[in-house]
Length: 339
Ligand code: EPU
Image (cartoon, rainbow, N blue to C red; front, side, top):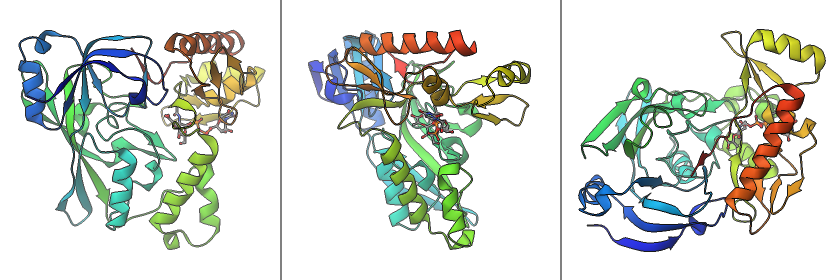
């Protein structure tokens, strides 16, 4: 049976640095650890709260549940196919550590997703994405323990039902699985993805194939460092809201009133808007409400100015949602999971 801790301070375990205590916390390093925890006569009956790197959670108070901290280790190349490599990582590994590990072994393909905080196991839950690449495009399959039965199941890409910052683990299967291992496919030959505006200057420096994966990696890390606050210095959970998607009719009415609005046409005819732009346009960039604030270089990121409670962050988020709704008639949806 893995070690169980009582009355654990969760502040060091969430990148927002929000206060909250767990009545019970168990660290799991294998599928068998998970099975022992859920078969435990007392703990097995408690509600569960699965915690990875705590980089996409909003704690609004104490957690009266069994916190299962996923610490499954391991990084390996499991298969070499003619057109791709398959790597497998334990859910408890750091996502950025995995990206570095693949590049150091000459297995590129994840560099656009460099420097994203959090663990490997959390990456499929919200289908992490950045700089023109989403995890789902590199996803092969994952292993997860089904908590009701204790059985290990393997889910492929289709079964995970990935969407924009979304998957089955946030929808129908929320709370049903604990992800233990993730397998990713890295296409051969490697081709750089430089379509995102922040990376396009790499293209101008030379012919595209001459760009090395490590140059893309370095550029992504530089851009993220410049725009996004370091959670070790200023607590945050990355983008606080999703970029909203609206239909063509709503968009054409909106662009007439707000011609400067940043927008991206989507293949089906809908439009995605930059939530950071909407929030900045409402005057929130750099502003504080109590100890919670809006980052001064990226309005989509809410920050803990030191000593903020989860409630303070939620109040700020609600005030922002109201301003954006009043001006643009758009409802912003939070990205982190709120507990
Ligand atoms: N913008 C503003 N003001 C702001 C912020 C952004 O006008 O304060 C404008 C920018 O000028 C740009 C556009 O909005 O025209 C997009 O900005 P940016 O490139 O910074 O990306 P984003 O849409 O704000 C998304 C992801 C990030 C990801 C970046 C890069 C979401 C919710 N966020 O942000 O993901 O790193 O693209 O790909 O999709 C995260 O999910 O936690 C996250 C950081």
